[in-house]
Length: 95
Image (cartoon, rainbow, N blue to C red):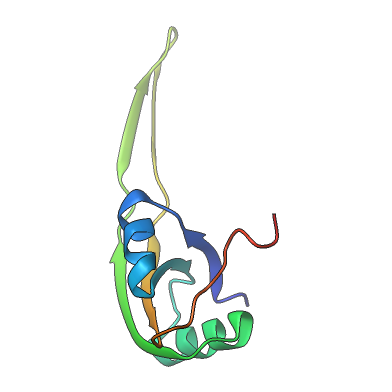
């Protein structure tokens, strides 16, 4: 099971990157110590703090020519990770 699904790259989190704070979409069942170990192992940094948030799926409705299509967006869990002073995570280094 992959704990870290993808990094969050938004305007707000990009501004927080300068302070050593990074965001990730993680597995819904992942706990804070598991997230900390996964980030430290994958990026080779020291994690100081982990904050998590769970988001519920939203109902969406779209009107087409023939009918109304309704469904849900996926529920997900977000983790905000703070690394030690002077350490950085380079998301764009592999591109």
